[in-house]
Image (cartoon, rainbow, N blue to C red):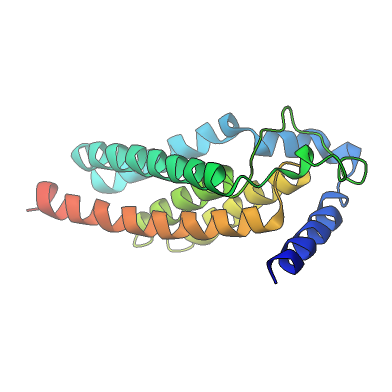
Length: 189
Protein backbone atom coordinates (compact mmCIF):
# COMPACT_ATOMS: atom_id res chain seq x y z
CA UNK A 1 0.00 0.00 0.00
CA UNK A 2 2.70 2.48 1.01
CA UNK A 3 4.85 1.44 -1.96
CA UNK A 4 1.91 2.12 -4.27
CA UNK A 5 1.31 5.52 -2.64
CA UNK A 6 4.97 6.48 -3.05
CA UNK A 7 4.91 5.29 -6.67
CA UNK A 8 1.91 7.54 -7.40
CA UNK A 9 3.60 10.37 -5.52
CA UNK A 10 6.68 10.04 -7.73
CA UNK A 11 4.56 9.91 -10.89
CA UNK A 12 2.63 13.03 -9.86
CA UNK A 13 5.90 14.77 -8.97
CA UNK A 14 7.35 14.03 -12.41
CA UNK A 15 4.19 15.26 -14.12
CA UNK A 16 4.01 18.51 -12.13
CA UNK A 17 7.75 19.14 -12.20
CA UNK A 18 7.93 18.65 -15.96
CA UNK A 19 5.19 21.23 -16.53
CA UNK A 20 7.92 23.80 -15.95
CA UNK A 21 9.64 25.67 -18.75
CA UNK A 22 12.88 27.61 -18.83
CA UNK A 23 11.25 31.04 -19.36
CA UNK A 24 9.44 30.61 -16.02
CA UNK A 25 12.37 29.21 -14.01
CA UNK A 26 13.60 32.54 -12.60
CA UNK A 27 10.09 33.45 -11.41
CA UNK A 28 9.76 30.16 -9.53
CA UNK A 29 13.25 30.52 -8.06
CA UNK A 30 12.20 33.93 -6.73
CA UNK A 31 8.95 32.50 -5.33
CA UNK A 32 10.77 29.64 -3.58
CA UNK A 33 13.35 31.97 -1.99
CA UNK A 34 12.55 32.52 1.71
CA UNK A 35 13.63 36.17 1.58
CA UNK A 36 11.25 37.10 -1.24
CA UNK A 37 8.26 37.50 1.03
CA UNK A 38 9.81 39.68 3.74
CA UNK A 39 7.74 42.64 2.41
CA UNK A 40 4.57 40.53 2.77
CA UNK A 41 5.47 39.63 6.35
CA UNK A 42 6.20 43.30 7.08
CA UNK A 43 2.80 44.27 5.63
CA UNK A 44 1.04 41.65 7.75
CA UNK A 45 2.81 42.90 10.87
CA UNK A 46 1.82 46.46 9.96
CA UNK A 47 -1.83 45.41 9.54
CA UNK A 48 -1.71 43.64 12.90
CA UNK A 49 -0.23 46.78 14.49
CA UNK A 50 -2.82 49.02 12.79
CA UNK A 51 -5.75 46.91 14.01
CA UNK A 52 -4.49 45.80 17.43
CA UNK A 53 -1.88 48.35 18.58
CA UNK A 54 1.76 48.20 19.67
CA UNK A 55 1.38 46.03 22.79
CA UNK A 56 -0.56 43.43 20.81
CA UNK A 57 2.02 43.58 18.01
CA UNK A 58 4.73 42.62 20.51
CA UNK A 59 2.64 39.61 21.54
CA UNK A 60 2.16 38.69 17.86
CA UNK A 61 5.89 38.92 17.14
CA UNK A 62 6.67 36.54 20.02
CA UNK A 63 3.89 34.13 19.02
CA UNK A 64 4.95 34.14 15.34
CA UNK A 65 8.60 33.57 16.31
CA UNK A 66 7.53 30.61 18.45
CA UNK A 67 5.27 29.32 15.65
CA UNK A 68 7.99 29.43 12.98
CA UNK A 69 10.52 27.85 15.35
CA UNK A 70 7.99 25.13 16.20
CA UNK A 71 7.13 24.34 12.58
CA UNK A 72 10.80 24.35 11.56
CA UNK A 73 11.88 22.06 14.37
CA UNK A 74 9.02 19.59 13.95
CA UNK A 75 9.69 19.54 10.20
CA UNK A 76 13.31 18.64 10.93
CA UNK A 77 12.23 15.89 13.34
CA UNK A 78 10.06 14.37 10.59
CA UNK A 79 12.81 14.71 7.97
CA UNK A 80 15.34 12.93 10.18
CA UNK A 81 12.75 10.39 11.34
CA UNK A 82 11.45 9.37 7.92
CA UNK A 83 14.71 9.97 6.01
CA UNK A 84 12.88 10.14 2.70
CA UNK A 85 15.31 11.40 0.07
CA UNK A 86 14.30 14.43 -1.93
CA UNK A 87 13.50 13.78 -5.60
CA UNK A 88 16.66 15.67 -6.62
CA UNK A 89 18.63 13.20 -4.48
CA UNK A 90 17.27 10.14 -6.29
CA UNK A 91 19.76 8.98 -8.95
CA UNK A 92 17.06 7.15 -10.95
CA UNK A 93 14.87 10.30 -11.15
CA UNK A 94 17.41 12.99 -11.97
CA UNK A 95 17.31 12.29 -15.72
CA UNK A 96 13.50 12.41 -15.79
CA UNK A 97 13.02 15.66 -13.89
CA UNK A 98 13.86 19.34 -14.00
CA UNK A 99 16.13 20.35 -11.12
CA UNK A 100 16.66 24.10 -10.99
CA UNK A 101 17.03 24.74 -7.26
CA UNK A 102 20.22 26.20 -5.86
CA UNK A 103 20.79 23.12 -3.70
CA UNK A 104 19.10 19.80 -3.09
CA UNK A 105 19.28 18.96 0.61
CA UNK A 106 19.18 15.45 1.99
CA UNK A 107 15.67 14.62 3.21
CA UNK A 108 12.34 16.04 2.15
CA UNK A 109 9.42 14.69 4.16
CA UNK A 110 7.78 17.06 4.88
CA UNK A 111 8.27 20.50 3.37
CA UNK A 112 9.33 23.27 5.74
CA UNK A 113 8.48 25.95 3.17
CA UNK A 114 4.95 24.56 2.95
CA UNK A 115 4.43 24.26 6.69
CA UNK A 116 5.87 27.70 7.48
CA UNK A 117 3.98 29.55 4.76
CA UNK A 118 0.69 27.83 5.66
CA UNK A 119 1.17 28.47 9.38
CA UNK A 120 1.79 32.17 8.66
CA UNK A 121 -1.21 32.32 6.31
CA UNK A 122 -3.61 30.71 8.76
CA UNK A 123 -2.34 32.67 11.76
CA UNK A 124 -2.42 36.09 10.06
CA UNK A 125 -5.58 35.33 8.11
CA UNK A 126 -7.50 34.33 11.24
CA UNK A 127 -6.14 37.19 13.32
CA UNK A 128 -7.16 39.73 10.68
CA UNK A 129 -10.37 38.07 9.38
CA UNK A 130 -12.58 40.44 11.35
CA UNK A 131 -11.02 43.43 9.56
CA UNK A 132 -10.09 41.94 6.16
CA UNK A 133 -12.45 39.05 5.51
CA UNK A 134 -10.92 37.94 2.18
CA UNK A 135 -7.29 38.23 3.27
CA UNK A 136 -7.16 34.63 4.47
CA UNK A 137 -8.05 33.38 0.97
CA UNK A 138 -5.28 35.47 -0.57
CA UNK A 139 -2.82 34.15 2.01
CA UNK A 140 -3.91 30.54 1.49
CA UNK A 141 -3.42 30.97 -2.26
CA UNK A 142 0.02 32.50 -1.64
CA UNK A 143 0.94 29.53 0.57
CA UNK A 144 -0.17 27.06 -2.12
CA UNK A 145 1.97 28.87 -4.71
CA UNK A 146 5.00 28.75 -2.40
CA UNK A 147 4.33 25.05 -1.82
CA UNK A 148 4.07 24.30 -5.56
CA UNK A 149 7.36 26.14 -6.13
CA UNK A 150 9.09 23.37 -4.19
CA UNK A 151 7.84 20.79 -6.71
CA UNK A 152 8.68 23.08 -9.64
CA UNK A 153 12.31 23.51 -8.58
CA UNK A 154 12.65 19.75 -7.96
CA UNK A 155 13.17 19.46 -4.20
CA UNK A 156 9.87 18.02 -2.89
CA UNK A 157 7.30 15.40 -3.79
CA UNK A 158 3.58 16.32 -3.71
CA UNK A 159 3.09 14.24 -0.54
CA UNK A 160 5.81 16.31 1.18
CA UNK A 161 3.86 19.42 0.20
CA UNK A 162 0.41 18.17 1.27
CA UNK A 163 1.72 17.01 4.66
CA UNK A 164 3.61 20.27 5.13
CA UNK A 165 0.52 22.33 4.30
CA UNK A 166 -1.61 20.23 6.65
CA UNK A 167 0.86 20.50 9.51
CA UNK A 168 1.22 24.24 8.85
CA UNK A 169 -2.54 24.77 8.92
CA UNK A 170 -2.85 22.95 12.24
CA UNK A 171 0.12 24.85 13.69
CA UNK A 172 -1.20 28.20 12.44
CA UNK A 173 -4.58 27.52 14.05
CA UNK A 174 -3.04 26.43 17.37
CA UNK A 175 -0.80 29.50 17.52
CA UNK A 176 -3.76 31.70 16.54
CA UNK A 177 -5.55 30.30 19.60
CA UNK A 178 -2.44 30.94 21.71
CA UNK A 179 -2.28 34.52 20.39
CA UNK A 180 -5.95 35.09 21.23
CA UNK A 181 -5.42 33.71 24.72
CA UNK A 182 -2.37 35.92 25.34
CA UNK A 183 -4.18 39.00 24.06
CA UNK A 184 -7.13 38.31 26.32
CA UNK A 185 -4.93 37.51 29.32
CA UNK A 186 -2.36 40.30 29.08
CA UNK A 187 -3.62 43.04 26.77
CA UNK A 188 -7.41 43.42 26.84
CA UNK A 189 -8.06 42.36 30.43
